[in-house]
Structure formats: C-alpha cells, structure tokens
Image (cartoon, rainbow, N blue to C red):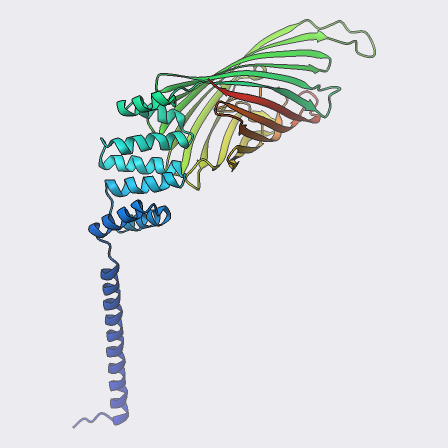
Length: 417
C-alpha cells in the first residue's frame, strides 16, 4: 500500500488552500466591482432629473461635468445637449456652445430654441459670417436678428503710419495709408476692400505704390468657408531725385510696373480648433511664384478669448534661402476692452492670406528673414474701435545682400456702419 508522507501531505493541503483563497479573493473583487457599477450606473430617468435640477439652479460647472459623465455612460438626447449648451453659453464658452447646440439639433432639427441659441453662440464667438449664414436658413432667426441690426455687416477701416528703417539714408523710410471697407452681400458672402498707398525714397529713387485688395468670406455651411482674394499693385519709380557724388549721371526714366497676387483658403471648423489649407500665386519682381500650405488654430478654452495658430507655408521661389515659412500667432483677450494679437514669422511669406487691414501683402524685392508684430485693439464705443500695430522686420537688400531692419508703427480706426 502506497502511503504519502505526512510532510508532503501537509504541503499539498497548503497548496490547495492557497488556490482556493485566491479564487475566493478574485470572486470577491469581481462581485464588489459589479455591485459598485450597479450602484453608480446612471439611468436615463436619473440623468434627466438631475441635469434639469442643475439647469434650473444655474449650477453651470456641475452641469457641464455631469453631462460629460452621462455621455461617457452612453446617455445622450436633445434636452441634455440643450442644457449643456446653455451652461457653456453662460460660462461664455461660445465656441463650444455653438457645437453643442449643433449636436442638439441633430436630435431635433426643427427646435427654435436650439437654432436661436446656435446663432447667438456663433455671433459671440466672432464667427459672424457663419451666424449670418444660419440666419438665412431660419425665418424666425432672421426676423429676430434683423430688427436688432446684428446682420448688418458694414465696417470702415482708416489707418496710417510709417515703416522706419535703421538705414534711412540708403533704404529710406516708408509712409503708409490704408482705407478699408467690409460689407456683406446676401447671407453667405462677405467682402473686404482695401485701397492703400506706400511712399518710399530708396537709393534716391522715388517709389510710389498704389494697391487694391479684394477678399471674400464665402460660407459653404455653418462649419465650412472658402476665402478667395486678389491683390493688384500699381508701382511708379521716378528718376534720381538728387545728384549722386562722383561723375554726373543722367536721371533715370520713370518706370511703371503692375503686379498681382491671388490666394485661396478652405477652412473647416471643429469644436476647439480650425483647420485650413491654402494656396497663392504672385508675379512679384516679374517672377511667377506660388505658396502652398496649411494652418491649425486651437481654441483650448472653447471661446475666442484665447487662440493660437500655427501656419506652415512652402514658397516655390528661393529667396534668401528660405522656402519654408513657419508662423505662430496668438490672440488674447487681456481684459473686457483690450485685445492683443502677437505674431512671429520665420521666412519670406509674401502673400498673407485672409488679411484685414495693415499690410495685406509683402511684395518687396528684399526678402524677410523673420518678422514679429503686436496688434492692440480696444473698442471705445459700440461703433468705434481703436487699434495700434507694431511690426519689426529683419531683411536683406536683394541686390547687395546687406542686412537692414524695418520698424512699422500704424494706428487705425474701425467704424461700424
């Protein structure tokens, strides 16, 4: 007869006991987690009741968190999104509110509250072209907002200033003036016209440039827009204004040239960011060139109080060895009546896309190595805003490759018609 030694028998029982204990522990963990899930599982009735209570109490922060929690649990419907939109709007997160009301309209496309709230969310987020497009799709919104004057998109821009060179004896300073007009045609189209003048004495040459810019915002949908533009330049270069030292030189004849630039931008908006692709063509300095690129604008707080844009553009013309242009732009609402826009661009970006006032193109034959600028805007009344613009440009003269700088100072008025 085979007998198991007591020492081995004791070890076997200990092993079986350990396995059983582990199984019991695992079963207890599973049972506890199942009970916990069952206790914390949200139901439609509970979500509807509690979200409505938070809405009526105007407990916006708790309501926003609670709706996100309900969405993670798979619960979503019209009233839940409408309450979330109201909370975001009350917190002045107008951009996030707009996309929330769009989601609510997917559940109930005919609801007038969501449509009206979407309109005001777009308007207050700065997306005025989209708000006008939406008003054209709804008779009730159109009647309500037209009486308030919100859909009248008329602005006049008056600005002037100087570009001051650190080599004013040779490069010369530049005087600048611009008159701009922004207006709408119908509910889908918005246009910006700009008439500008530049005057410069460079190497004893009297340079005068007149230009006309036409840009458009065409709303293809609430979240889609296309922006074509055209820029025309008429340049007159007069002869020597002063005799040069040394042997006498005959005065140069007056030279007149024409230049053009065209661009196209396609933009798609999402909840907290915009994406855009763009292309441009110009014949500056009698050389045909193109720019191709894209940009992304981030709105991390769901409003236009802060945004950051990264732009990358490839230039087909090799100027000062910079064919790839990288640009960073930041817009910040410093306080209720003061906005700041800062920008840094590395490389010779010649056609600035979607410009509105203040140097919409750089058609100088002298390439930029880099530039940075600051724009401060402050409304002084419901119809008038003041702005000041400073820009520093680090450049190289095209013919001699000698470095120099420009510092631009511009002041302007934006008047609502």
